[in-house]
Length: 180
View 1: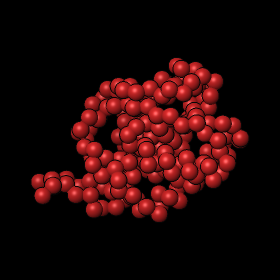
View 2: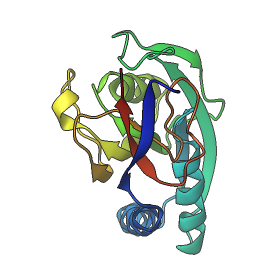
View 3: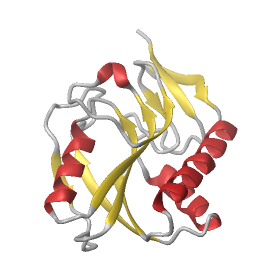
């Protein structure tokens, strides 16, 4: 028996689909026809980013896509407190509108690190979009420009988010309940 279960669905698949479409439409209005460089934070953002990109296409939004890997968790459930750039994006972001896409805004360390890094590379404007926001956990004062859903201070998995590299494949967001 596993020392946890993931049967408590917090955000169903249909709610995720609807909110992604709303986010894409709002971002598109704010862009006002400008091209956008999307930078997904791997690994957790991949499902959210893929659905967002498909929705952008439906709204006629032109994007170029790249990824960064920023690490702070390892295999635990708590951030180490240190963010390390393990892989930088390869697109030249100088003079570009950039949207950083991440799965969850928790302590604020990862996203604030990503924004500062992209600004240091000359990005014209860096905005952020997160699927989930957990404001009760904020250590670094940071607010995302676009938020899918606020969530309580529980450990969540699914739709790209993992627990020790498992459960990314769930098409919904579930709460992890730890037992014994």
